Image (cartoon, rainbow, N blue to C red):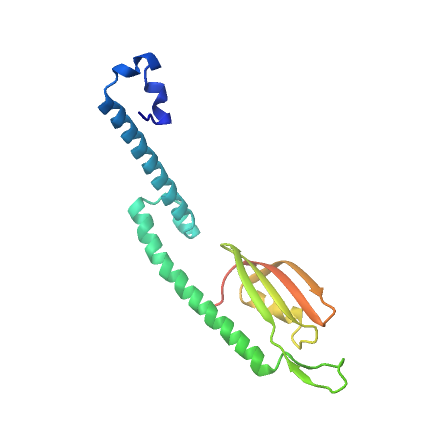
Length: 185
């Protein structure tokens, strides 16, 4: 016979257990399991509610209202992701067209022209916090200051920047940014 831990205080002493109706024990276990299931659901809905934008967190939404708002919010996020992907593609295309990363390798006597686009990685740390990692040539025409100015124009504020370089004329930038607003361009 199995007793749920939350009901142990209600169960009589072991010597009296033999007198308890098995259907009562089954009912107590079922009630405890159902209570635990409801607590888990409430916790999951609260977690779901907590990831909604700030305006939806000012008051506790009912479960149906939470689900409804999430169902509206997910497509909004999907549209935002698509816009950001398109914006990224436009920026990379613009960089490529400008020939930003064309440089002559002066270390080689034959003067071969090499093309290398920077590698850019963006990670969202929190709702309004991102990390951008850029790996590119030290001889880029666009300076880090130009990149930072463009990011600020897009509504990002720099919290921290670190840079390092390899012996092979490659530079690595790590940018930690706060998102204040996204421009509608």
